Amino acid sequence: MKIAVGSDMKTHVTGVVVDELRRQGHEVAVFGALVETPAMWSKVALEVAEMVVRGEFDQAVLFCWTGTGISLAANKVKGIRAALCHDAETARGARKWNDANILAMSLRSVSEYVAIEILDAWLETSPSIDEEDVACLKFLADAEAAR
Image 1 (cartoon, one colour):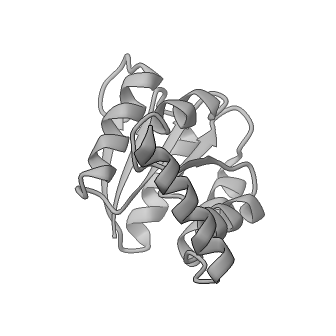
Image 2 (image 1 turned 120 degrees about the horizontal axis):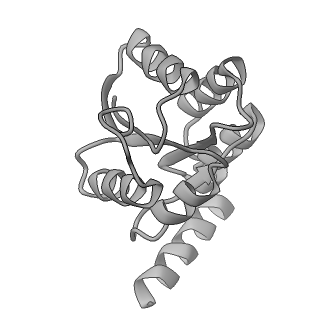
């Protein structure tokens, strides 16, 4: 899978996640502070989200201090469903019920071990094919299209 990883800060956790994705055999490209600093979280989020929507990447992982700003900014891009995840169960639910395509994590509150747990849960979970879940996503897409 082709995965973009972006952050406004380069930290030990961002490095661990990039290394883990590559270890698992994914094609990884890095953005923002993982390439050069300074990097604005809003710019990183929009750049990566637009590439995911265009199909240049299958999914993305984004980081900022709280994870909130980068997820909010990514969600400004039509077709993006970025989910801020602080644990593996939230990541599993975001993929299963929301078909989230961008994983956002907090650099402040997620350790390297928790980040790997979150990443593994995210990658091993597929979107639900349950009628009710599919209907919810269709309703959301229709509402987005009408805006």
